[in-house]
Amino acid sequence: MIDQRLRAAVRDVPDFPKPGIIFKDITPILKDPGLCEAVVERMAEPINPETIDVVAGIESRGFLFGLMLAQRRGKPFVPVRKVGKLPYDTVQQEYALEYGSATIEMHADAFPVGSRLLIHDDLLATGGTVTAASHLIERLGGHIAGYTFIICLDFLNGRDRLATFSSQIHTLLSYT
Ligand code: AMP
Image (tube, rainbow, N blue to C red; front, top):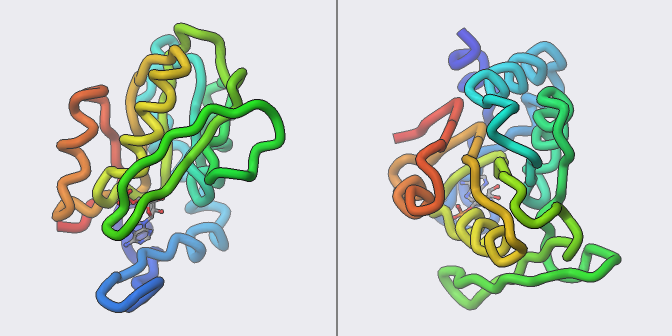
């Protein structure tokens, strides 16, 4: 039932941020407290708190539900940010975009070495961003315990890129 409510809430915005992209806008979910609660509940369900130490959220929409999920499971939350936003010592990871490149970073002391991290973002598209986050976490000495997304664009095959890090890939809503 939550699937239908979620699907109805996610708004398609054609040609944003550039022509040809159909942007999946999650802001209508945020206006419905009951639906937000249901999303967090459903995302938390398959996560065994004994198998994760930390939840990492990807800037910026990954912060919205990432923190709520971490709170729900009683875990610390750490942000993965675009370069230049974090104030303390950082470690960076560059990754390729369709045209050019982008860089993300985390605080060097975001989590203790050996921590098991669950990575959350609102949406999995090509998997480029979350693959870069996975490499960054591993360089900092963390292990990837799994992934959770609200939306997955199946036709972009992002899942395939993540399988090398973890088989635990959870999504609430898929578009084929
Ligand atoms: P990717 O690295 O290709 O998996 O892209 C994932 C990131 O870009 C996530 O942080 C998403 O929020 C954002 N993103 C990519 N495509 C879309 C889309 N069609 N609608 C909304 N957000 C998107």
